[in-house]
Length: 277
Image: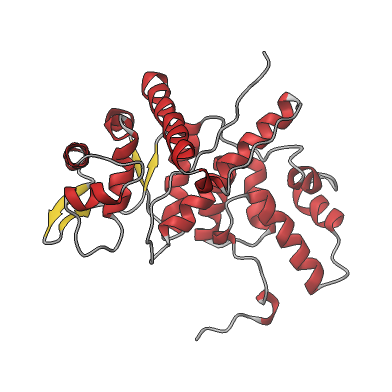
């Protein structure tokens, strides 16, 4: 067993964070707990050249540029591995597009012992039908058998045996599924979208909305966690919420990637619907 130096006991673990602002906030709070004489303003002035920069960054009022990231790594006494993760984390949190965020998330996951496979633009057959991903996820469950007939009997809403065969054919074509002694097995355990749009995204979204309607029409009790909020909002706040959505989805992906006892398949829907121009 490795004992932490006394000065590092309780120190936030950078690799457990997906938001660098949250890490910075927790880090300075830890420093305060270790030393009541620690000053956030003095710390900010010493390492960032201004007593207010650290506060502005933590509050989301300003971003970190490349030079500031280097200063921050020095301020936090990061080692080489931590420095690499922190640099990617800042870039990821400040990325402007889903494509950038997914690319950087894949790199971050290598530090976190989680290796998602990203569906690339030319592999979007995976999203051609809603049930392809469901069949993929079902095959990943710890089942004694995974034949098309057995899978079809377990999916809700109901699938035909032919639909399951179709899904397996696509998954094998994409090299996500292989034949096994039990029927079929996954070649990759964790799949995320690489960011897709246009007709593929539109059609997939329509299918998911139809899926929701079908389930609600047959068993409304399945919507215990359903929640809707309608509100007026500024464009600035909307962008901040979208970033929170992205961060939350990535946290969900991290939880799923480390789950060893899966026993069900769920489709999670995150959506913001604009109601005014």
